[in-house]
Image (cartoon, rainbow, N blue to C red):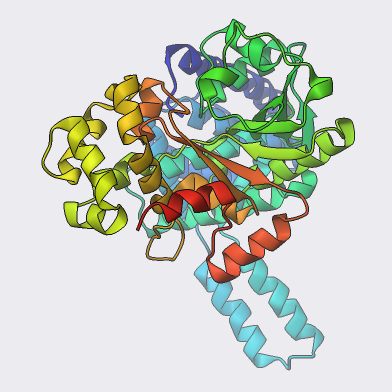
Amino acid sequence: MARNGNSTSFFERAWERLSRNWKEVAFSGAKGMNLDLQKPTKSDITALKKHLTACLEAPGGEVSARARAADLGRLYLHQTAKGREEFLKVLARDFGVRREAVQSALGKLEDNPEDSQAHYLAERELKAALTPDSIRILRLFNSLPNGVKFLVDMRADILALEERDPATEALNAHLKDLLSSWFDPGFLDLERITWKSSAALLEKLIAYEAVHEIRSWDDLRNRLDSDRRCYALFHPRMPEEPLAFVEVALGDGLAGSIQHLLDEAAPAFDTSRADTAIFYSISNTQKGLQGIAFGEYLIKLVVQRLQTEMPQVRRYATLSPVPGLSGWLKSLSDERIGALLPTDQRKALCEATGKGKSAEALQVFLAHPETLLQDDVAEAVKEPLLGLTARYFHEKRQDGQPLDPVARFHLRNGARLERINWLGDSSTRGLRQSLGIMVNYGYRPDELEKNHEVYVNEGRIVLASEVKSLLKKTK
């Protein structure tokens, strides 16, 4: 998520606190142990290699290892963006897998019978040899306060590099494997976030919200009201850092408008009458954990929690954006639209814009989506645009997966496409992203496994009757 000025200062303050904490660890550990710890300086490749080698090979026990790791971490924190890039490249290129150790272990495997003790020892030796020195160094941060968070953010820096050579790609892959083992879902805790949660945590919620920006503290209070729920996943080594969170609205029936759900003036709904839980915002907060799935696990845990706490709630669904829709619509030729929509719907698009071709008419709405907020225009083009949206969900990438990233997430998770909502998001962002259209994905606990198997094994999307009806009105 792009960080605004306030959230940028928030993250900068976090780095400053971390540097101060590690300074205490470094100098406390160095005291009386004759460790060469210095004030962090700007990038010096020779000094950096010496520092990394010391972390890897210098004698001493756990205390000295922690001190060296803390000192190395402070060195990284004090670098400019360019300095961090150089740091990562040195770590990747000069502290990778030791090939001679790999060759030695392979030789022992070949020289000893498979069932021998020596062969098994050689297998273990090979496994150790395949672990790059960079990862051996980075593992030291696990014992530091906020060290795991530091590594997560370091991987985010790797992912942000404009150019990644094979060495940095390998470092990224190894670090992802390390973090995947630490962030196994079995290690994570689900917690509810309320208005009484710590101010620091609420501040992070505002900074990390990636779907519908939290505009103010009043907006946040509304999202944590009695008819709302907010749940987040936490790791024991990052207790104040939500890994992913979901915002839920409790009501009666499917919600089709995000403006309605986020209306601060609307009275709180009586939750004793609630029969539906709407998941309207799901955010992964840690860029460094990209590729490590949390969202699907989070939704399933929240459904289980709500089933226990609110048994009257029988329906679970999302109110989701369609981030790829406008891009796909923009790519459609007049011939392609002619193959998707019947004549009367194409004519409606043209008449609403005064254009002679439906593709040209579509471009008008994509360039000026705010015109869809006019009642007469909306009524004229609603049917063809909803029909095209239904067709969009059947479009696939080369790998056979749906074009839409949000659809891929929910369908893989066992949801079904429940409903397509006209002008579900009339914000500037929503109009530009998908002409204001949003969708509901339905989560029926007793159908999740079956839907998942149908989607994964057959590539088929499970549709509710309302969406099937829209498709029948197209070609």
